[in-house]
Length: 640
Image 1 (cartoon, one colour):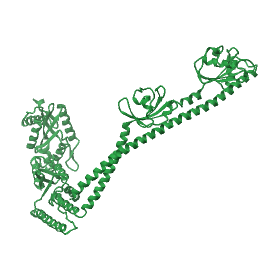
Image 2 (cartoon, one colour):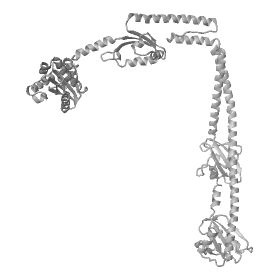
Image 3 (cartoon, helix red, strand yellow):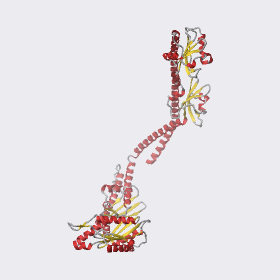
Image 4 (spheres, helix red, strand yellow):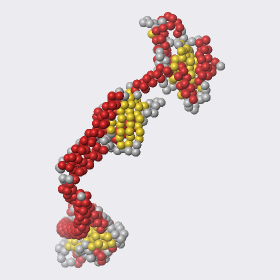
């Protein structure tokens, strides 16, 4: 019932969502296009306003400068006409130009010839020779003594240098006084009135363009990215742009659609453009956001309706199902409590009674195991994050505390990892026995099923410790702790069979000198201490190169293995003798003695060498040492 209701509710709401999305899509597209149109119109108006402001500023600047320049020109005419003693040479003219704060100062006679100037190369220029200079000849023909001419900035005739000249008629004589200025401020103001400069002041969005097209020629006069590019696309052409006053979509060079708005100003069209895919992206983002919001609303509506439908009946059924699921997964302490109606209460009581019966069976099994006295525990789990069934003795056998046991038993995956990590390292010679601590060993036996594992863990510490102790006693000498000779021969034989290529090993037979006299003089207890002291020196040799054993009485043997050459064997023998010499043994409270030992050794690099033969050769070398002199070592090969 609940699923059917939710199904049809979902279908109705989803259909409504898609209808809303379609309406929203159309409305949003119109809104985005209108918003972009107003944005472009605002930017174009700002461009026009900036152009007009710059032009007004330039006009005011030019008028102020023209008035200032005319004043300076008249001041120069006044000085030249009133101060007869003023020389007309170049240096004096330069001095006068500096006083008047002008860049150039010229005097033109009644014939239109520059007779004096602050720039020496300008003297003698005929003003009628160039359109730029000939304009000032009109002042010579004028009868108005206050006549003047202010020329616009342009390249001059002499050097093609951009200059602005102002000329006034002389009053005292026929002629013209002319001053010149470098139009820095005007050029700077004009540069601020270029399209590129103005466009640079307006930040554009990603892929947005601003450009200006001449209405008569159709040429692109300015572009926000510069004009060093091709403008062959449709949306740069004059005729289509004339129809974009209210916004229109035109084609780009790559065939994609561009949204363009244009506006006339003076003799140009000022245009703004944006690829249509940018608008589509905005539309997509808006639509996706709206879709998410509607989905959230749908989810909330379904949740509320679902809550209202299943409040009394469905919740009770689900609660029972969940509790049953927990019970089937092994959480047997689950209590099913569902109220609301009599049927649910009876069903809950029946389930709880059944679970209690199962728990009692499990407890009886654990109690039987404990009564038997056998250190044993069992576990069972299925694959996945399910609880683990265990008997009570498991945590003691695994040496884990209650907290760790609780964590592992709640999650079969964790328990599986823990058990298999233990089983990765069985003790030597066994496949299913594992060491948990110095004094605890357990055997783990597991059987795998399709769903999980069933396992039994038993404590085998006593058996393993006895076995290890027995092995130690069988292989080690009780007095010295060294290997027994027979076990030594087995180990040494394995080392010979495993000699790496390029390596060699040696067996050393050792006999303690004068040991009988020590026993006779100090007693057997001191003799045993003497033997133990010497054995401790043998124990101190590097374990990765020495095998040490007691043969019998005061006779010992060693194997020195994994040596690069014979020189390394000699180095280890010298190390051994040095250790003996540095460790005297106390024979009494007032007397100590350095152990004297004689050695014979034989070496091999052949894996097929028989250990008995090698020991025999070493024994022969020892015999020769004992016969000649004591307290040293000798090699069998040197005696042959």
